[in-house]
Image 1 (cartoon, rainbow, N blue to C red):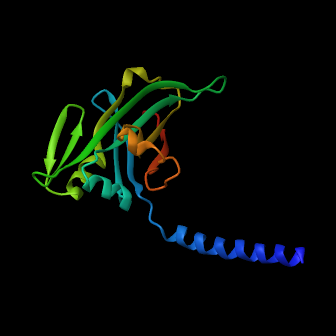
Image 2 (spheres, helix red, strand yellow; image 1 turned 120 degrees about the horizontal axis):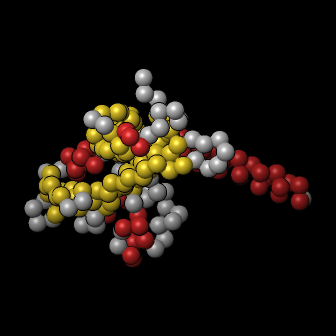
Image 3 (cartoon, rainbow, N blue to C red; image 1 turned 90 degrees about the horizontal axis):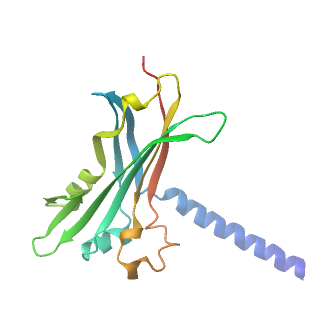
Length: 189
């Protein structure tokens, strides 16, 4: 009797695993890194990146109801050391805010103190999904004999959502979207 119940339980677990496993494989990544490149230009190490964003339904619904959503891109330049923890050379971050303006049916994107209005959500997302010429560090800060790497992350920043919305977001995959990469910085030729 106990053995039969155990086998039935195991069968149920296998069926549920197949159902959830196949649906998880069919899902599209909400944020996908299309480009990440570090360039030495005009005496500085700059970063260029582009991401593809497919907002989950819950995030898009919140935006349509006037809740501002924040995205953050962070880059940390580190120098490799064999004898101790790697040394942080520079750390930079950019924060974008997207909000729907219902009176004008437009989308407002804010970066720092600058705001720009766009006619559609797709246009607003196109602006927050890329950056070119983003200065990470001055070249004189970099030792030509050392090895460097860059830790990059781009994510939806749920810490800046209104407080009532933050309650219970911890376990919701729709709001925990982002991408991370490590990029090795080549030495100067």
